[in-house]
Length: 301
Image 1 (cartoon, one colour):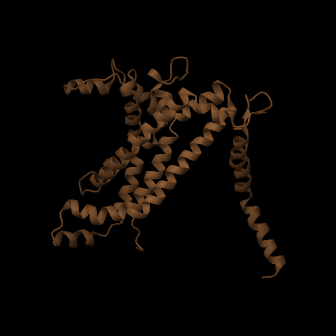
Image 2 (cartoon, helix red, strand yellow):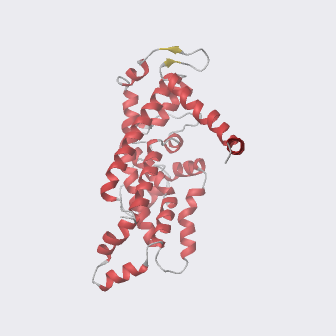
Image 3 (tube, one colour):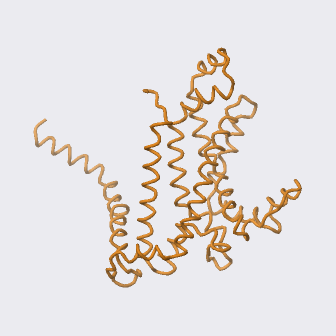
């Protein structure tokens, strides 16, 4: 192809891609670069940023609320990610059973994922209320202890995880679609050879689902590391303000970042926190990808 024709084709391609390129540059690339610059400054949104070097990063080492928010977030991640994967995988197997009303059950499982997060947050505030909440009422009927979900530091973080698991239907449906792709002949042949349900799951189902599981773990991990809406709504007061819950036990990393940026007007410090979380997410994701060579099985291998 002549050079002029190649240049013309290139310009046409750039013209068609220009809405995305402009949007990416304005709304993604520029904010990323600006936040990196602001992380080395003292910036309150109303005055010109003042360079402070590494002071924002050094301040995190002595900031108790920073460590508290980071610890809460890692706790939620360590508890929420495995529970999400296990419940979604088990739910997918149940929804894959040939029973009457199967489409209805699948729709009911997926339904909470399309409910607005704010609506779900206020719904769970009512469900987890210690005085008149349905969850404690059900526990009392079962003769089980009724904890102070939103008032106790010991139960507030499990309450966030419980609320997050309400939308596990999206992950379940992805697993269900993956189960449909497993050839039935493999299970039938293994059953004829005497393999039980557990051995068929271990040697057929799990290797086939391992690439999907890697994807689900990474996506769920990032979701919990960035968790904001659930703890924010559960700790919101009548004045539309949000604290960190009892003893800051519900203060997530994103909540503290938000408070520094838009409540305390410490945009430089908030930008530094954002980059620290980016590095934490990058490291954990890289470790997961490195470990996947041992437990993820692809069809070409």
